[in-house]
Length: 316
Image (cartoon, rainbow, N blue to C red; front, side, top):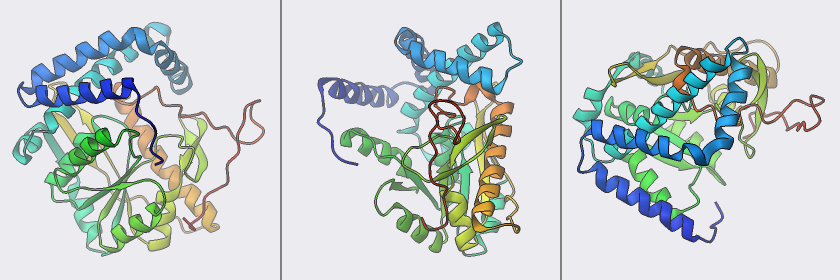
């Protein structure tokens, strides 16, 4: 990422981050969650645009849902994100025993069995639940995880984020020049590449697949990796339970497409992975980040502001 000049606001954000990490080292998890929820409520007047976008997206996903139900879902989503903020401050100082106690994991045997093939694994997930805790819990379970992330504009904040994501054995790969090569190298080293594909990302190749009944531009690189190398694609998600604990659910590998051209197979596998994400979001709708511009890019010919991007292939 090209370095941008840091402004006064950037220094304020970094200062707030350092303060939150200091607080996270002092207070217990319930207090940190309360602080996170309080900050989320205080931020409400400043994120009116995001709240309107959330409502628009909920209308797309749940057209039968009435206004009061959407408002309640947005409120519960706000509470969830506040809890996530508090948990991340806690996670910077937690040890493996504490992470395992907070978060159960089921289906991890699917990953261990897939790694026996020696070709690595593509792990598909989403910005659902506390995805940073998902990364930590997989590391605690002994999964050799590599994750592809966008570099943060402020190198100081990026260093903190990288430290968090590496605390339990994870390997962070920044998106940009050489990303595909490093992801391929990780698979050849029989690692698990954790990739989030629930966003419309402008600088990544993708395909249109259904998401809540509407075509959504979705990163197709993971499917291309899987088909080119022959490694399994496994969905895994985390959700918060009513008592505040968490569960990671690792699913069986997705079926490998066998019919059609390479592009057809990439689309089929991306659609199957997206369907798994949709199923998880439907089960826990208050734990997905609804302000994402998930349906921003439209297929050619749809709407006045449509944008058609090149279809991905395995030449990544």
